[in-house]
Amino acid sequence: MHGRIEVRDGFLVLLAALWCVDQTGVLPLFLLAAAVHEAAHLLVLYLAGGRAQRLTLTACGAVLRCTLPEGRCARAAVCLAGPAASFALTALAGALGWYRLGGASALLGVFNLLPMPPLDGGMALLHLAGGHGTAALRALAALTTLGLLAAGSWLFLHGGGCWLLLIGALAAAQNAKSLASAPAPVYDKHKI
Image 1 (cartoon, rainbow, N blue to C red):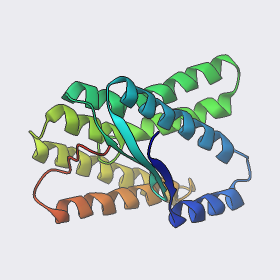
Image 2 (image 1 turned 90 degrees about the vertical axis):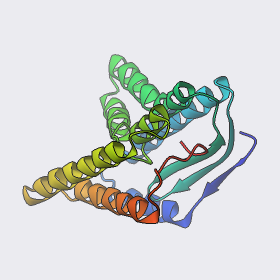
Image 3 (image 1 turned 135 degrees about the vertical axis):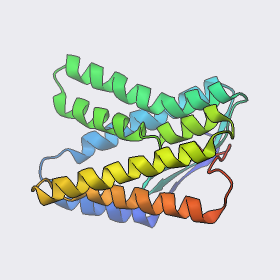
């Protein structure tokens, strides 16, 4: 990448907090799965003719700023490359008997396919829609967020922990911010 990698304080705080509560040693597996996921985005970006400018690691994940290739399908392919690599790593890890790595990678891939920006699934839909149907895409993102909140609440009330509820709350905040910022779509051709 010709640009740079930026690490925000929130990412370091989150990483330290997760390291402290990770009693099972799964955090390094998630970090490896995330590295494979992001590397796939970069590989397909370069193969499709785009160029990366900066990778920013935040408390909410990785944000890749780049010049995207021409064409809606090429842009969507860049977005979907990360989840595809996650599922490929899941299959490889399962074949090798590394089930915890496979599980971490599968979870990362499924989560990133949720149809809400700035996740890969939401961004791929925005690119494929090409600026059309933004009301339907926003409604789909809102329904997905409500689903996360409902599932997270149910898990929390039944002793399943609070992580999914927190993720749903972060997604709700992101969607509210997107809706309040402008009536224009969340579509940003320089961000995947």
